[in-house]
Length: 635
Image (cartoon, rainbow, N blue to C red; front, side, top):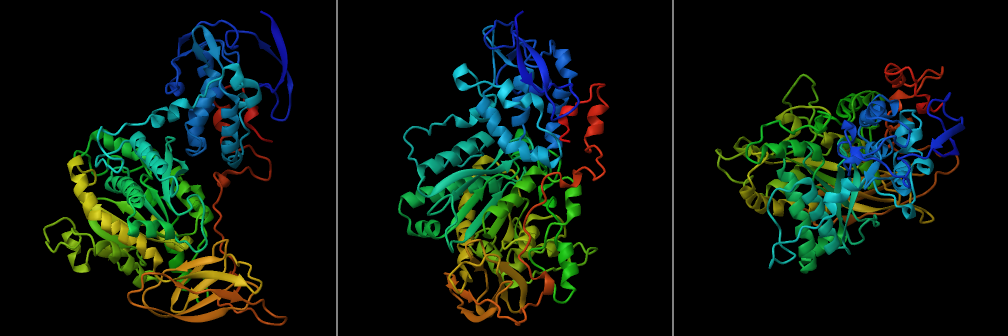
């Protein structure tokens, strides 16, 4: 056969950073030459968008056995574990396109270079975090082709079943809501179709991927979707954190359609809400667990089947335990007990990609209010969820914002017809005396919950809503559940406009970000967003509010919030720089610094030691083959 010479990194060379001549044989793997197509029998590539391949492949491996024993294939099979679910299954399918190239009509097709380049840009940080070099066989310039060369998208199957539009039954208006269970693909189609209908006020975006590679898709409603507007509060509603608790998932799918339709129909309440609020709906935080639960069928689902994610992690026990740290700090005079940083040891354990996606999401927007929708009972609970005495499984454990949290919980429960039903025999009847609301730790105590994390790490107040005693109800029950929860969902979102809001500026009108807003008598501060705006949820009454930032004198104002006030009061602050010789006014000493909200990067606990030892994953690969894959080492 004729051969050509290219300057390529060689997989068996001494390590990264070197180059050598390697012969590339014109073979059946070349797109211009004939090939014998054979069935694709590699288990890690079974979900590829094609069924036939050819040998030798693009790495000159001449049989299925040679591919399966190679370190390249072994890497693909464990990559989702190494990267903790990030870029999965995209990277695996991209690698399969090289190790098992697509064969059609006796011709081999190469994957598209632009797909490789886009994925490398998105996934390079995940490799950097575990101190691993980008795999040589995913070199976009050498193993991938341009579109004009007839390449194909190896990731097409990931999006293929989501792109096809489902036609509505004939004769039904576009405002029609189908009160049924939605598969992942159906959910994505509905959300994207809804965003298209209301493009002027809605858009969809992904906050990350589940462990099995499904987008965690959000639909947003706002007067200017896609961007934060000055002093416009932001709310997030999250469903399906437990995969088998599906009512919240469906309620948010229906709510998205309802908001769109009512906005277009001119409903003044909905138009006012969308034009003054940025609303983010994440119907399914655990789409992988949902698939497990849905496989059993509605009405037959067990109490725990599908509850956890694909890593067998309970996502509502997977967040950092900041509540224990809060209790420790609360006993020390003068220390801050808000915006508590994530402890380093948290990253030593398993952190689900879904959990990480939520934490990163919280950094992208100044969320003020949130609700997590669950199933299994009928009650609204609020923080803290972890008992202030760790040995007490049921113990009233309030936050400094106990009054406000009770108002938030009641905003949901008081307009929910079943929560207000006085029958003790109904679902959730044991919470009647408390008005169908309860402090979480007074119900049962647990650590690692999402609501406690929101309150202690950010400015966001989150409640937990248990929507009913049946976790996966039959389809015919969904319309009734929607009628019960529609008003409660709207009422709760409207609560984001309670309290005060404003802008903190310096004397030149420049916004002061990360300034602290303190309320006397409530040991929990909120901080200003990058534009200097803030929101402070507060119950009715008189409050002394203080704005403070390093390098400035603090400013104090008294505000009175009327009992029936439905719109946040405007309270701005102008901070003056501290004069020479003035002492900084601070009750927190050295702790009075802008809060550290940065998340620990993926795999930060796994960095190599200063002594130059190999990364933690190196021994695994070297134990499998005499050919050590030095191309995986960055140094």
